[in-house]
Length: 300
Ligand code: DON
Image 1 (cartoon, helix red, strand yellow):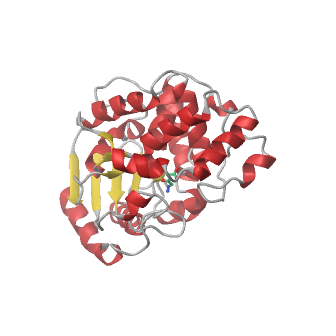
Image 2: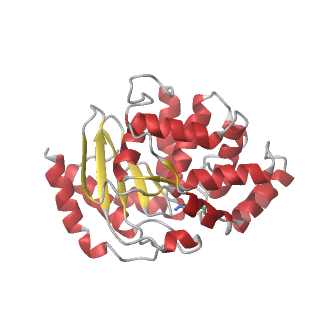
Image 3: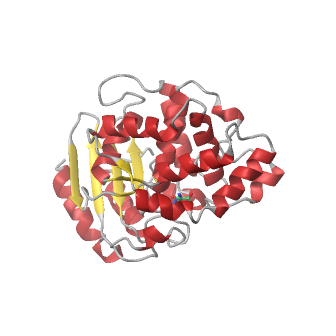
């Protein structure tokens, strides 16, 4: 298959969707992002193809949650005593289930669950430092970093996440002081990366746990579990619709990125900042929908 031509075709097909939806404005720095569209595919043999703005860095936001979960599982921590693995059916920043469920978030991809994962990683030291060194090694780009402007903007508008973290602390489900967990979480979300770099960095999930240098990050079962939780929970209260349209494990971010995995074959990252009502990129979902339709590469 001529992947480069295929990605150009997808970029053309979804052009009418680019600019649709609304940019995330609860983090003011994200509201200033220019429209655009990018798509990159990294295959398990090392090839990378892209179209559109595939080399333009954007804010990874919740896509970072996949990588922090992987790093926690790689350390052998049993994080599943602190966070569940069921879809929430509620918005990504919802508080409601925590009170009825003893401060244990439904899954590691809603904000509450991601805060628990970041807290767990913080028990081992500098969580963002560990995350950056992983992303730099996998992408081959040593200049990947936190966007300080986005981080400051999010830190100034983080009352919902602060509330989630303190609420979980009241149930004994925070190991570190909330301000330091929040600082790590906000900075991990503010990392800027291109579609190319995200796709390369997520390849370990297509390779059943093997990193780009051939070493093993995760066992087969942990890699399978992350993919499974991405499929069921990675796009929040739209996870059913995403599985129906795309049929791949995927994780979105309010920066407009979505990373999706074709196990055994490739990792795909799309970006376009206009979001639907559930916080998922409109053109990004459309592009992944076209990708699995045209290639037949879904997990089903
Ligand atoms: O915590 C937040 O609200 C953001 N840093 C991340 C949210 C996000 O990306 C949700 N994804 N669609």
